Length: 610
Image (cartoon, rainbow, N blue to C red):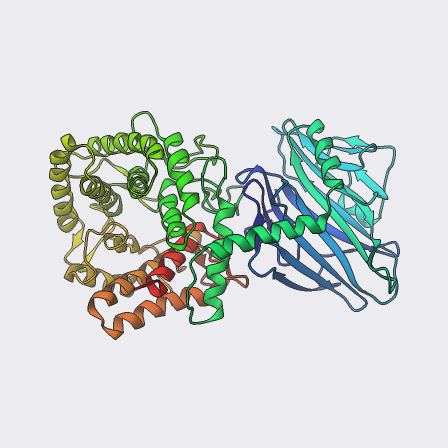
């Protein structure tokens, strides 16, 4: 598998998720759901100019300009050379599960004969053996395994193809009209640019080509897809998709931002997060995948209930609460175990994803979010939510021992197994919300008693006199940014509490990096270990925002803006936020949902109605 640890641009329609490079190359194509399966190992575009091939991602031949349509998940890429300029427009149609790629020739000084070669190396394995086939009757190229047909076609007739086509074959422009099928994951097809009339009266034309890429579960569905899409007008598809995203942006809260970059990140967050939600179940993934080969991490295209809590809090703060309604009324009840717990992570369809251990804060996070949603739900939805809440609370109660400590569990960062502060605080918050909202009175006395024990344990077992700070765990006395959760979202400590102020001082002393942001934990080793995390940095900004609202101390406001501005200034070109800003340049997991969620929460705290 080709290693590619970046997603520069992300588009989709909640059934399909596509990432595209800064050079216009498709990096990943997820369908029929946003987390399964990923179909592309390598996808290349080659411009054929007078019978010679030029790969469009080759910087020796082309320069690039790229931008998103304003307030929409529609991407434009320009390929610029001395004599030729081609504009590529990419979007996933909002009404049909299809990627639409339109190519327009903006400059062709030598009046060259132009064709486009689409090469695809399909993501496969020995278990899922890939075959290729060209269908002459319907004029499409498909690469398929048992339940996955990845298909390229156009409303312009093709002029050549090669199943079993290697890169070398493509560069030699070899085609074979006799060999229509073969056991190969690499194939390509060629289409000519055709004249498109722009103005009949002035006889104005432009060379243009539409390419469509879709995935269906069998070849009969393939044929229906190809017939249907060929009858569509791609400009109407574009207008419908554009209007859909414009309407999404119109519905969200409006703020007075300090600068254009803040607004760009806010809008990009609004456009990105819905792409990460399955509109059938409400399941929300942490990110578009970056590491299919599991070389550097345990993968990201899964649904963590913890991430989901922050994700849904953010959507509700900015005005996209309907998404949260689906998540809390369908996905969480669907994924709850019979004993009341939630496992570590899931696929968007609700099935259990690969896990490496239990994390009790996943259950606590689910209960916290469910209770918050329960208070604003309809009576019909409350029925299923209440069952999930009660079962979840019962599990959490059973997980606390006589001393008021939780069972051993993996911590928030999933690299420590034991009794950690964040997990215990998350349980306290779930209990607190349950009692405050007057659920089953028969449980209240027991839960209040547990809450008192938990508070004392956090204040005693997780406070370190030497470091003058709350630390990660009872047996692991390192400084951890997750201690900020004691203020938000778990509301166990006031921002002005003396021990909390001291903890924040320790976080800044031990975790602030050379480039300005905040590491997640002391002694970290993941992806180099010395990188600032967007989550941690925004967590600290959020702490100072809340503290400033109490103290009205200008220094607290300065600190809040310092960390918020640092994140703003370290976003990607298009306003995406990563998990980590790499110390030696670059971004790790560009477009992380949790990072964007924290940004939206900070925006509301900074600029929302007072």
